[in-house]
Length: 150
Image (cartoon, rainbow, N blue to C red; front, side, top):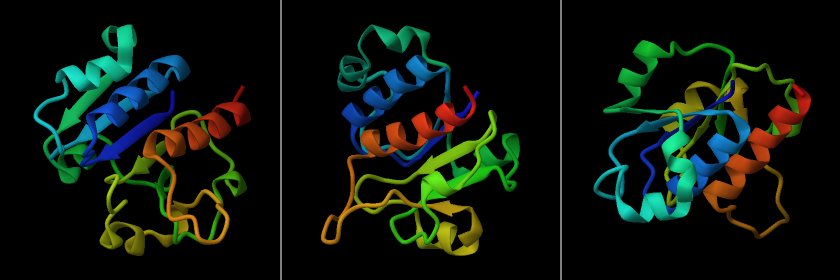
């Protein structure tokens, strides 16, 4: 099972969509607070997740440090960043890997990606493109990992 890690997500619709993806791909969803919305059971989250939400395997954490206490950081944790030099398709994934995605407005903090440059992966885009929607980015990475392990 792959692990999708959302650090401080802001948009409830994106979380719902990613939750639906997690169910469809058999992933575990890890949600790290604070959120940009009130609560994970908010109507907008559930609407985007549709009826998949009842089957979602997820855990909420108050902080990244709390997450790492239960999921110790190692070389199988991958941080997405548009500044990474290694593309997501240049990595060989294992079934229990962790994929981190940051806030929709700023991505993962530089303190995190800067401390672990060898664990950073990017999704290539044409020049001038700033970013993908986070739900699309999660889909791209998860499906490549799933493809490699199917």
